Image (cartoon, rainbow, N blue to C red):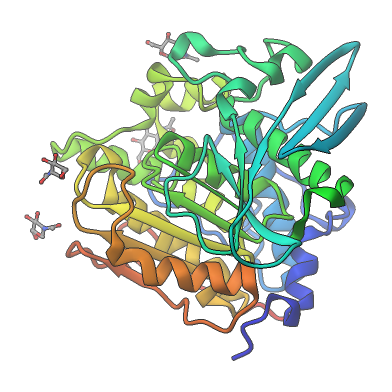
Length: 394
Ligand SMILES: *[C@@H]1O[C@H](CO)[C@@H](O)[C@H](O)[C@H]1NC(C)=O
Ligand SMILES: *[C@@H]1O[C@H](CO)[C@@H](O)[C@H](O)[C@H]1NC(C)=O
Ligand SMILES: *[C@@H]1O[C@H](CO)[C@@H](O)[C@H](O)[C@H]1NC(C)=O
Ligand SMILES: *[C@@H]1O[C@H](CO)[C@@H](O)[C@H](O)[C@H]1NC(C)=O
């Protein structure tokens, strides 16, 4: 097994190249979708099977489009103008659109070991994993970009100053848009001494939800580490609804849209009626990260986080990596109860394996699916994922 990302050029191309729309099946009307199980990752909405890497590029586009339309809101095109400069430890990024201008300033904490240009992790509201040796941390103030205080936060923050308070994007998509600008700014500023081919993203809890969305929508990120992200992050809407129905208090779609503004208001219609009408679930969101690195960190101690929902969704997502022949580029680790967002030392070796593979290009064993719970879940799963996994041909 060759572990280097660079040794998988066709997979990397898949991750970064846009799709030519005319080669892909049209995305049909969603009105009739109604399914209790996690939608088959490997079947287009029109029923056609996904058999090749080229098919997957189209399916990925379909999933991305539907997630934007129905749940996360639209990721805008790059702004009309964007400038950046680096000074001290601060990247200053200015974007202009339609006569409006915003400026935001991520700061970089440099490692005390290693050599420039450094690999880096973008911290969605900071990181809650221990800072890895030799890795720079880019501190992104996501709440300045899009507020996440309450349901009354809709449309507040720099992103909405630029695109209007009625932009469809929820807070998480606004953050993903800003992460794209941070990557642009890092590329424009070699003085920042970041190796832009070795940048990942991480965050915990609500910011873990945001880290997953950023990883899904910014293809230059080579590693995504959502930590204890729960519903709206690594959980399945459908499985979380089921868990709540068994009497276990779990965050669900109908709760989340009343709690905060992480999602587009376009999602309310599904959250208020039935998530079975969604032609995707969060295994689909996770699968957008493939074939890049994804390491999902969970904590079994909090029912609210829906750890079984995360396990089912992420084991299902992992089939996208399996279809590409790189199953081990995606890992899942669920630790026993500990304080929320305090990273337990038991997960450190697994975290190191992912950091070393994706940020340092080392050959490490990242074939990790572990839970301290007594869950079993494999695809096909009769209740949740009754579909089979192809091996993509080129
Ligand atoms: C969705 O399917 C269920 C059966 O699985 C049915 O009870 C329900 O009425 C359907 N909903 C819609 C909107 O078609
Ligand atoms: C969803 O339900 C909430 C709370 O009852 C309500 O405020 C909102 O208008 C509803 N939205 C839609 C699209 O049905
Ligand atoms: C989980 O751990 C936290 C922190 O130690 C503790 O407050 C909480 O009671 C624990 N929960 C359970 C279900 O044991
Ligand atoms: C293990 O499974 C049993 C029922 O099968 C359940 O009651 C128990 O809570 C589970 N334990 C954990 C840690 O998930």
